[in-house]
Image (cartoon, rainbow, N blue to C red):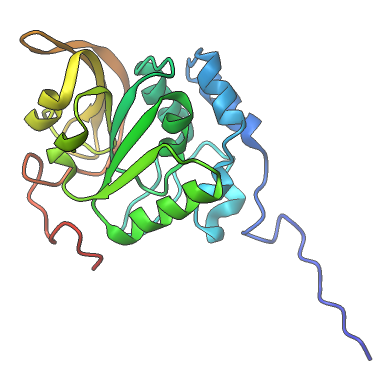
Length: 235
């Protein structure tokens, strides 16, 4: 007798996403994002390819999703707000601090010329690289290390986006940003922040405004909070 495997309905299978990228585009619009180029990129970048299989069903819900090391992904509408504030046109070199699983990295790469992304955890960096490669995203360099130090070897950058919170912008990131370049960072202690937009002037950063109130994990490193484990240590 042949036994046929039971077909698991999509609403019971956590590896099958509910919804589609257009749902995240609508969420971004509702949050005030009007950058049509960014919204087009969101439509063709499947978030389901950048989240753990166990949470893939929620990929197109506008919520954070748990990932490794006690962290969560950034809410997609918030990602869109932060990326939109950079005002990317396609020719920029971008520095991203906090790669995560690579969804925001993919958006940046499809909006700019080149992205350098610094991630603290080697296993997370490897996962992000695999996700990006599977999606055909090639103009990204992922570096494992202390994000507060940036990546001076690839500077200057036209834009910097920091995906963790600290009460001030790390000085190395300011130095690596070209004059006229934009920087977005959650400013606060970690857990209750204002995501701020800055522009580098001839005498340093100039605050251009607040994007939104949000909650982020803390920024660790030489110019952030003291790290409890060495950078590059997967444990």
